[in-house]
Length: 296
Image (cartoon, rainbow, N blue to C red):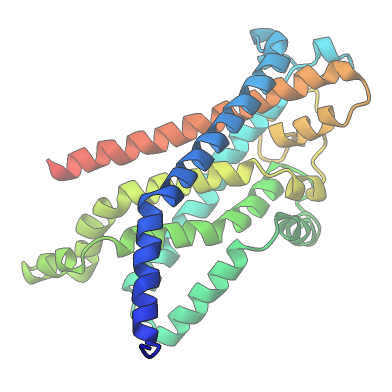
């Protein structure tokens, strides 16, 4: 009888897993992927079928109303667009600066590791906690009240860890030899960073940041905690106005006892998904376009 060999056992297990991966496991993964895609498409089709009667210009540019067939989504749509722009302006510059300092600055390795660990923890904190923090810090302590500015600061604080992580990953993918070569040819480290590293990393930075911000703006929980009102009869004209957003409006309509509001909620979901899709496509276009410029 042959003695038991642990190494031989692991080799057999490795061959068995490889054979399974080439056969049944790969087929199972494909079937699961196709099933998930079909379920997502079915869900989107169901939402479109329910809300198709309200997907028109009257609903898109109309104002809110207590009557379901007269209610529009224009104030919530403009509030979401305002918030997207403000969160981008408030989170992208400091996030990029911090990422550059962590990747290219002369900071102790232990401090960098500690900061990275804290950033990962902050990115995983539930959104309700950020809503509570924004309510206490921005709305009460800074006396901003319930307005677009306090909401933008809250969501920018929520998006900042993800923005920093995304920018760091994009900068890390740029070969260090590119910057070293520029310095060897006479450029200063700052010039090499500004003219070589950042332009090369810009496609990954912008695409990742835009996807992160578009996801954050779709959050309803922190805005509800902050005090976003669902019934706003006007579109915001400044950062100090009261506001409503598409997620808040969807939450309000979906909780109405009247069944006539269900098509409004479904149509608003379709519009929100359309905005998210536009941002995803725009980020993809920016990445591909900038890569072509770099190759040229």
